[in-house]
Length: 317
Image (cartoon, rainbow, N blue to C red; front, side, top):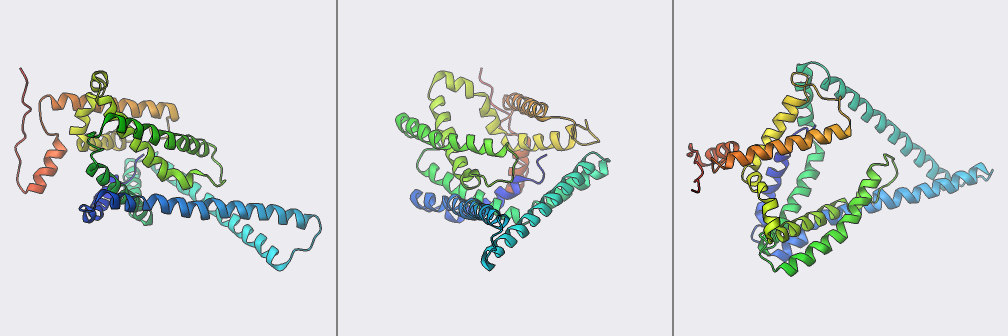
């Protein structure tokens, strides 16, 4: 669960996005949408259109061959390439299954096996896939910077603007997310439309969430409902680290509660929700007494090059 550390991705991406901080919002949005546009174009052409075209060709040519018609050299080449591609796919599936089985053995073995598996997964994260993750994160940060400069992230735009933005974003993204969930749960090797639209759907959903949160904060009831999450925001890095420690080094490893491989989907979701609620409660208790969380304090002290005071929160009487 959660191998590697996404903070590495974000840190490198932030160093890249930093150089564009002075750009105006329009240019930031244009550049920020590059990743989504590239994914849409590349996945659309090479991941969806071409495979579907090839599949249709193979079906037609196979029927033609089975009917006794002699195929031309180019037609035979199409079937040969399709056969080779299918063989590579089958080999990739077998290799993936072997990796999954090996990880299951390591995660269910000794404590030493677990530690080695975790280190291995963390190192694997630094491969070519990490470059794509950094690419995606950096361009998303540029969009975030644009939204900040447009005063959208701060919720400083008129409520009517936020309402229309929220409706438009959800109207665009929710159907794509539903389609993506449907395709993902079919567990087939068929080309999926979501391969091309995932990034656009993610950005749209995020924009909708931003608008909805600010609309809720503009009401008394909404502000009360969201108030507990203020504590999570003030202790975000600490509860992130605590979550990783609890799940990776307490609940699931063999030297902890050894839950790996013993839970189905629903129990795992309940464990996840329970951990999140517990950490939220802990954050709420912490900010009542302190203004800064432990990991945030350690990080800022390291950046400042000195031990900063562990400030206590001012209690309102």
